[in-house]
Length: 134
Image (cartoon, rainbow, N blue to C red; front, side):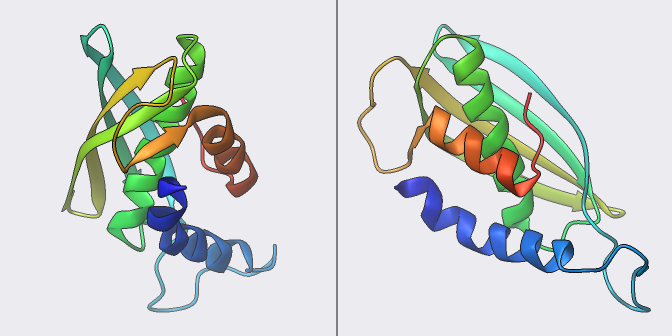
């Protein structure tokens, strides 16, 4: 599964944050836990969708890409499609706010390409990891 390859480091980061105990605050000099600050979707064509995600407290660019991937998977399901294919993702950080700009195609059948997502599987993995979707 192509999504698993890119999501490994994001999952490791999420597990590191999740391993903190409830009474523990951030350690001096450590990153605050990631906060998911919203997803904007824009339909570019019948099957082409742009996702802009915002986060703060991000450890890596992969965290932002994972958030966009989760949004794409849920969006595909909402629209009645079972699959998505990653086209591109760009990530920028400014003043501690991370913005991801991702484009995915959505389709009812498995699309051609290497970076395809089974929307149901990815959305379930996102829910297990605590990553919000659309």
